[in-house]
Length: 184
Image 1 (tube, rainbow, N blue to C red):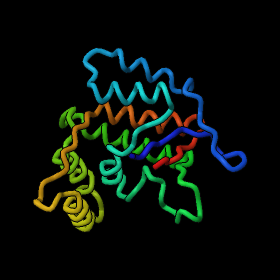
Image 2: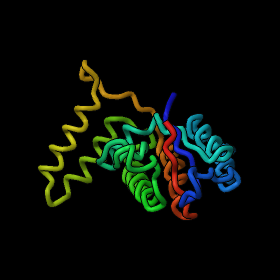
Image 3: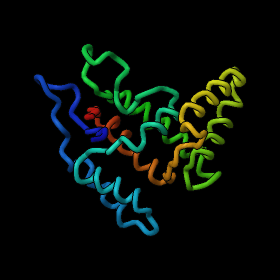
Protein backbone atom coordinates (compact mmCIF):
# COMPACT_ATOMS: atom_id res chain seq x y z
CA UNK A 1 0.00 0.00 0.00
CA UNK A 2 1.28 3.44 -0.84
CA UNK A 3 0.27 7.04 -0.91
CA UNK A 4 -2.02 8.36 -3.63
CA UNK A 5 -2.67 12.06 -4.16
CA UNK A 6 -6.17 12.28 -5.62
CA UNK A 7 -7.57 15.46 -7.16
CA UNK A 8 -10.82 16.37 -5.38
CA UNK A 9 -13.31 19.21 -5.50
CA UNK A 10 -12.70 21.99 -3.02
CA UNK A 11 -14.24 22.59 -0.60
CA UNK A 12 -15.87 19.31 0.27
CA UNK A 13 -19.59 18.95 0.25
CA UNK A 14 -21.09 16.87 2.99
CA UNK A 15 -18.89 14.30 4.69
CA UNK A 16 -16.69 13.40 1.74
CA UNK A 17 -14.58 14.97 -0.97
CA UNK A 18 -15.79 14.32 -4.49
CA UNK A 19 -13.05 13.16 -6.86
CA UNK A 20 -12.41 15.34 -9.89
CA UNK A 21 -13.41 13.71 -13.16
CA UNK A 22 -10.37 12.37 -15.05
CA UNK A 23 -11.51 14.44 -18.05
CA UNK A 24 -9.96 17.45 -16.27
CA UNK A 25 -6.56 15.80 -16.81
CA UNK A 26 -7.07 14.02 -20.14
CA UNK A 27 -4.50 16.22 -21.91
CA UNK A 28 -1.76 14.65 -19.77
CA UNK A 29 -2.22 11.62 -22.02
CA UNK A 30 -0.57 13.57 -24.86
CA UNK A 31 2.72 13.42 -22.94
CA UNK A 32 2.81 9.66 -23.40
CA UNK A 33 3.19 10.07 -27.18
CA UNK A 34 6.03 12.58 -27.01
CA UNK A 35 9.31 11.43 -28.56
CA UNK A 36 12.05 10.20 -26.22
CA UNK A 37 9.80 10.34 -23.15
CA UNK A 38 11.03 8.06 -20.36
CA UNK A 39 8.94 5.14 -19.17
CA UNK A 40 8.36 6.54 -15.66
CA UNK A 41 7.38 9.96 -17.06
CA UNK A 42 4.93 8.35 -19.50
CA UNK A 43 3.49 6.13 -16.75
CA UNK A 44 2.95 9.13 -14.45
CA UNK A 45 1.30 11.17 -17.20
CA UNK A 46 -0.92 8.26 -18.23
CA UNK A 47 -2.06 7.62 -14.65
CA UNK A 48 -2.91 11.29 -14.17
CA UNK A 49 -4.79 11.37 -17.49
CA UNK A 50 -6.84 8.28 -16.65
CA UNK A 51 -7.51 8.84 -12.94
CA UNK A 52 -6.62 12.36 -11.80
CA UNK A 53 -4.29 10.70 -9.30
CA UNK A 54 -0.55 10.62 -8.58
CA UNK A 55 1.05 7.61 -6.91
CA UNK A 56 3.00 9.89 -4.58
CA UNK A 57 4.98 7.38 -2.50
CA UNK A 58 8.04 7.51 -4.77
CA UNK A 59 8.19 11.31 -4.62
CA UNK A 60 7.71 11.96 -0.90
CA UNK A 61 11.37 12.09 0.20
CA UNK A 62 12.37 14.24 -2.75
CA UNK A 63 9.46 16.69 -2.41
CA UNK A 64 10.05 16.97 1.34
CA UNK A 65 13.73 17.72 0.73
CA UNK A 66 13.05 20.28 -1.99
CA UNK A 67 10.35 22.08 -0.02
CA UNK A 68 12.07 21.81 3.38
CA UNK A 69 9.19 20.22 5.27
CA UNK A 70 8.18 16.69 6.18
CA UNK A 71 5.24 14.69 4.87
CA UNK A 72 4.15 17.40 2.42
CA UNK A 73 2.39 14.97 0.08
CA UNK A 74 0.77 13.22 3.06
CA UNK A 75 -0.89 16.53 4.01
CA UNK A 76 -0.11 15.92 7.67
CA UNK A 77 0.67 19.41 8.91
CA UNK A 78 -2.26 19.17 11.32
CA UNK A 79 -3.17 16.39 13.69
CA UNK A 80 -5.27 13.71 12.02
CA UNK A 81 -8.16 14.34 14.38
CA UNK A 82 -8.18 18.06 13.51
CA UNK A 83 -8.40 17.87 9.77
CA UNK A 84 -8.67 15.60 6.75
CA UNK A 85 -5.40 14.93 4.92
CA UNK A 86 -6.03 17.43 2.14
CA UNK A 87 -3.76 19.86 0.31
CA UNK A 88 -5.88 22.90 -0.52
CA UNK A 89 -5.51 24.80 -3.84
CA UNK A 90 -3.04 27.26 -2.28
CA UNK A 91 -0.95 24.35 -1.00
CA UNK A 92 -1.04 22.79 -4.47
CA UNK A 93 0.24 26.07 -5.90
CA UNK A 94 3.06 26.14 -3.35
CA UNK A 95 4.09 22.56 -4.21
CA UNK A 96 3.95 23.31 -7.94
CA UNK A 97 6.03 26.51 -7.49
CA UNK A 98 8.70 24.66 -5.54
CA UNK A 99 8.94 21.82 -8.04
CA UNK A 100 8.95 24.17 -11.04
CA UNK A 101 11.73 26.30 -9.57
CA UNK A 102 13.74 23.23 -8.67
CA UNK A 103 13.44 21.79 -12.19
CA UNK A 104 14.44 25.13 -13.72
CA UNK A 105 17.58 25.19 -11.54
CA UNK A 106 18.34 21.50 -12.15
CA UNK A 107 17.98 21.33 -15.94
CA UNK A 108 21.28 23.16 -16.68
CA UNK A 109 23.09 20.55 -14.54
CA UNK A 110 21.49 17.42 -15.99
CA UNK A 111 18.16 15.90 -16.99
CA UNK A 112 18.74 13.00 -14.56
CA UNK A 113 17.75 13.82 -10.98
CA UNK A 114 19.90 11.98 -8.44
CA UNK A 115 20.56 12.39 -4.76
CA UNK A 116 23.88 14.03 -5.61
CA UNK A 117 22.40 16.44 -8.16
CA UNK A 118 19.59 17.40 -5.80
CA UNK A 119 22.19 18.14 -3.15
CA UNK A 120 24.16 20.26 -5.63
CA UNK A 121 21.12 22.30 -6.67
CA UNK A 122 19.95 22.86 -3.09
CA UNK A 123 23.45 23.85 -1.96
CA UNK A 124 23.65 26.45 -4.73
CA UNK A 125 20.23 27.83 -3.77
CA UNK A 126 20.96 27.99 -0.04
CA UNK A 127 24.55 29.15 -0.42
CA UNK A 128 23.34 32.46 -1.82
CA UNK A 129 21.04 33.25 1.09
CA UNK A 130 21.46 35.63 3.99
CA UNK A 131 21.67 32.77 6.49
CA UNK A 132 23.69 30.51 4.19
CA UNK A 133 25.82 28.79 6.82
CA UNK A 134 22.85 27.91 9.01
CA UNK A 135 20.78 26.74 6.05
CA UNK A 136 23.61 24.61 4.68
CA UNK A 137 23.97 22.90 8.08
CA UNK A 138 20.24 22.23 8.03
CA UNK A 139 20.55 20.78 4.51
CA UNK A 140 23.45 18.55 5.54
CA UNK A 141 21.40 17.16 8.43
CA UNK A 142 18.43 16.50 6.10
CA UNK A 143 20.67 14.75 3.58
CA UNK A 144 22.27 12.64 6.33
CA UNK A 145 18.82 11.51 7.53
CA UNK A 146 18.06 10.18 4.05
CA UNK A 147 21.12 7.95 4.00
CA UNK A 148 20.77 4.32 5.06
CA UNK A 149 22.64 2.64 7.93
CA UNK A 150 25.67 2.14 5.64
CA UNK A 151 25.75 5.83 4.72
CA UNK A 152 24.47 5.14 1.20
CA UNK A 153 22.12 7.70 -0.37
CA UNK A 154 18.64 6.84 -1.64
CA UNK A 155 18.63 5.49 -5.19
CA UNK A 156 16.37 8.06 -6.84
CA UNK A 157 15.76 7.64 -10.53
CA UNK A 158 13.82 10.68 -11.69
CA UNK A 159 14.12 13.02 -14.62
CA UNK A 160 13.38 16.71 -14.88
CA UNK A 161 10.59 15.82 -17.31
CA UNK A 162 8.98 13.49 -14.76
CA UNK A 163 9.16 16.15 -12.05
CA UNK A 164 7.69 18.67 -14.51
CA UNK A 165 4.69 16.36 -15.02
CA UNK A 166 4.36 16.03 -11.24
CA UNK A 167 4.47 19.82 -10.87
CA UNK A 168 1.91 20.18 -13.68
CA UNK A 169 -0.54 17.98 -11.75
CA UNK A 170 -0.38 20.25 -8.70
CA UNK A 171 -0.43 23.37 -10.90
CA UNK A 172 -3.60 22.11 -12.64
CA UNK A 173 -5.23 21.52 -9.26
CA UNK A 174 -4.26 25.00 -8.06
CA UNK A 175 -5.35 26.77 -11.26
CA UNK A 176 -8.74 25.08 -11.34
CA UNK A 177 -9.44 25.35 -7.63
CA UNK A 178 -9.08 21.63 -6.87
CA UNK A 179 -7.58 20.17 -3.73
CA UNK A 180 -5.58 16.97 -3.36
CA UNK A 181 -6.66 14.25 -0.96
CA UNK A 182 -3.79 12.21 0.48
CA UNK A 183 -5.06 8.63 0.43
CA UNK A 184 -2.62 6.41 2.30
